[in-house]
Length: 155
Image 1 (cartoon, rainbow, N blue to C red):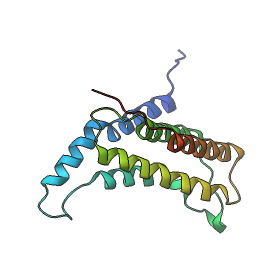
Image 2: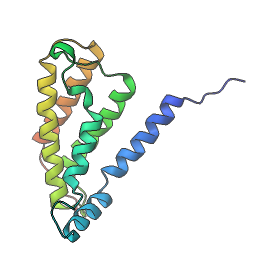
Image 3: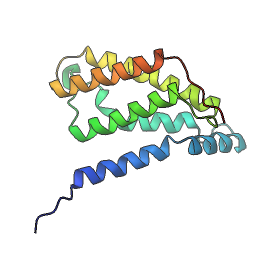
Image 4: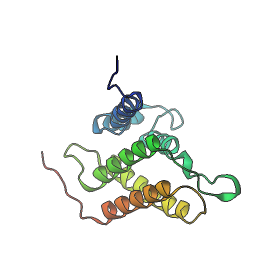
């Protein structure tokens, strides 16, 4: 009996849901508030650490491959990376009214950093045409988001 169930699509949706939770305003507020409660600076889990770990995990392919080449990125990873870029762009351009200023500033910093990494990666040889188009599109999305006028939501 044939089925229309797509395991790769189900996995991608699960990953998108987790990414949405990790980059949500609610979690950002809790992490920022909890970091202020830590007794020592080394004990606190910070929003910077969370975003850095998400970035490192999602964009591991940006590290140079053998001979300094650009590593290929498969379709499922590209989809998840696009979701990350879209979330960074949204946090950068249209933060919610209850968004913390520190979270917004960190999202802008992450967007700038990722844009620089994408531009550097695109200068390397190798990878597939799909990977190159994906990186170019991601860089353009971040460039536009960072250049856009900030829209503030009111409560």
